[in-house]
Length: 561
Image 1 (spheres, rainbow, N blue to C red):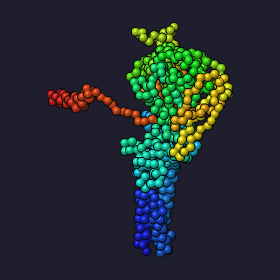
Image 2 (cartoon, rainbow, N blue to C red):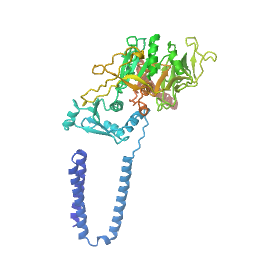
Image 3 (spheres, rainbow, N blue to C red):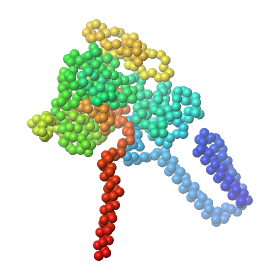
Image 4 (tube, rainbow, N blue to C red):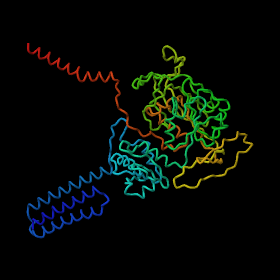
């Protein structure tokens, strides 16, 4: 009977192994796998029962007691190891030692997922699943049970592929209730991007599209790609679901009432008095303003700035700390690593922002206005009154001493009143067929205002204006630099995060989603000139080996004498 027990034991092990292997190959055959594994266990149990039944004195032997103790110890050890592995898998800890935390979700991504109020599913139409994509999605899912993901073979699940109108393998879609959105299309060289996925999550949750206007017509940086432009900043805002439009006040009698934020970026010509009054009216009605002026740029907005208790200092900020030498930058590039306590900069910690040709902001206290410093320079900076001199040195009588503030966020508490504003543009999903419009009362003649511009919906129809209450707060951000947001500088360090977070805060976005943008891998390539490459080749292949031979010959010669 002993040989039958051995046969049963090994046959049971064979069945269990076969079931596990089949389950690893095809997870869809779970019932078959459970049946095979269960059959293997049953065969082993049957063999044990037969063995015990045919060996009556088995339990009385000393060898049985020793074997039983060994089995119990082994099973206990396996249970402990299994429990440790289960807890490790359930409550895993990761340590990311890369400089940019490349393998860790950014604070923005984590906060965004934690704040999900509705279920959200990511569908990856790709087969077989990529390990990198799976790991990234698993990191998202750890932050909120409402975040789900599914890998779909479009050739097998044809109905789901048709539901999302999948045109090619590799499409990644988001679905939240009745909204669907394409994230990106994967390829072997273009895997799932945290940047694109996080932006898509933020965008699909928006019920309204924030509208941003950027002032043009006075020599400001263009919003289109060019020598000096804000194209990278504008494209980033649009990727996050904002509508960004240029605004020329010379052709518009007032700022469109649907504007959530107006950006004035370093105009080279002074604004006309009528244009200043238009901006003043926009602020009085509760509009939010973002002012950015470089050093030595003429600012003629004193009537507005005085009401808010801020002004631009005319002197150029000089950074003599030497920190810029690490980046190959001169003293006219201000490096900031200290930030005020504010939603815009709450997660910046000691990270770097760069400001070429900056100026200081001076603020005074005003009733009903809260001013918060954002960007604080180090103790080796000052405002230089004569930057064109032969030598640049601090003068206690003429220069502005450190520390300086080159950015300030202001909030004005408003008395509740009504103002006119067009109805927000509601984001439409693929299933939306009706267009919502709402008739409102027209402007009254006694308002004594210029006729508002005709507002267009995305479909090109006239959009009526509706009455709404004046917001409880009006916000303004004043920065003594505009270059940091221009192409080339926008992607340096946290410059882009500063700009986007500022616009988000001004646009009355939920402060909890303001954080650091997801980071892409840092380019670590070393670019050599042909001369440097040839020098390295000579050093590695000829000079250093030749020195070794010379030392060896000299040593041999000395010993042989």
